[in-house]
Length: 235
Ligand code: TMP
Image (cartoon, rainbow, N blue to C red; front, side):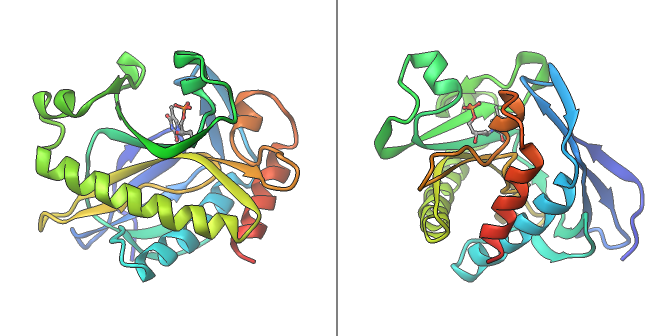
């Protein structure tokens, strides 16, 4: 499968059309940003790691009945995926308080929630990806109520599977962000990636942060943290 024109370039990935209109090729980059692009940098090897890790995790989710866009990993940094139209929504699950919720609501970092918190953010750089609710999503025609219900159900299932998967590997899944897309046939499937860029991972033994917070908060040993996560996932 050959890459044709690039149809999208995000902060961490590029998306290319292929000769087959139902398939895209995704290329993972080493570029990293934080704070809606305020902080920019490179995490050496990140593209290769996130491509491998996402492939392993999406395969696991598929085996457990979650429909994803993954067809196969093509190379170190490339994946063949089903073509979808992405809902302009960041779908976030929080199992433990960290990041923006600690600042916005004053909840202490590390506070465990009895049930997962489900959030939507509107994917829009101009407005800083604001937090929105179901009514905003429907009013802005970003998704229908029915589609929201499907996305919520799939995300909660993904959370259950990921919590267990990472627990077996000594990792606490603090929170994560996923994105969904719709195929030409109208099926809603998991898209984008699941990696240290899009999740918070804490070592259960030591509490060490093994994710992009090392970059966001200048904690050092960023590449090592990403490598450690890949080692745990591909054990
Ligand atoms: P937050 O605490 O900054 O709102 O982030 C919640 C989770 O979502 C965290 O695991 C990081 C992830 N995330 C992204 O993947 N992309 C984003 O643009 C943002 C804001 C968060």
